[in-house]
Image (cartoon, rainbow, N blue to C red; front, side):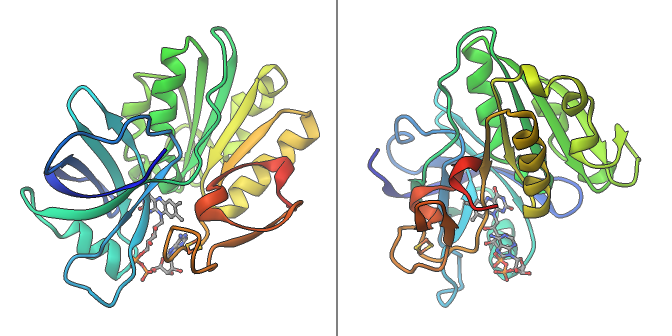
Length: 259
Ligand SMILES: Cc1cc2nc3c(=O)[nH]c(=O)nc-3n(C[C@H](O)[C@H](O)[C@H](O)COP(=O)(O)OP(=O)(O)OC[C@H]3O[C@@H](n4cnc5c(N)ncnc54)[C@H](O)[C@@H]3O)c2cc1C
Ligand code: FES
């Protein structure tokens, strides 16, 4: 699918808790690129910071009916702060869609367990919606440090049976995503686990899936600069040698990784 370089206008900006923002964007001209895959990402040019490189952000949702692209951003540094400081009506310079997304070749009645931690839930909402359309039994395990960081939990209820885990036990099952009921009871009957979050979380999920023989995909969030396979700063070691996560990923089957 060809990537495009477009200006998007901020239609709506919503500040959530814990430094998270939801941005609804619409192309200034034309329509969203066709066939955006869940798990793909955009590269945003940081406004007023010409020295900063573009920043990679997952596609949280692509709403073709309304011509809206939704991003979920957690402010962690200068780039994300600058993007989230913009106002409704301002425009952003974006390249999309980038990378390879999650598998979607499932049939009605299959069970897929989505696992997201922190801002890693971002690419999983669009995947949940697409899987539900296919008739898949979608389970979502949403892990966070505490109840304040469960910023988009409600949105998942439209598409998946939701389970929550929090490190401090303030909501849902206390502990890690691997302590959830899904992992205890459903892993062996699942067609696949698809996961995005902090690397230690994804490694723990991958280890349990390997143990139970459940196929598993993870979306890596290696540091990126160009997002186009040119700078080599996002390289990951795989069973086939070093690859650029921005072009060969960010989604990988764990069998491809050396974890
Ligand atoms: C494929 C991909 C998809 C992403 N999707 C999202 C998303 O949907 N929403 C979102 O909020 N963020 C997402 N990120 C992370 C986001 O790109 C970084 O948080 C952002 O680039 C940080 O830029 P900054 O200038 O604000 O912070 P910087 O000043 O560059 O960094 C601030 C702090 O964040 C850390 N950091 C920077 N980049 C990353 C990273 N990739 N992973 C972990 N820590 C990082 C730095 O080590 C530093 O401690 C994604 C990253 C990748 C690679
Ligand atoms: S970010 Fe430049 S090669 Fe991947």
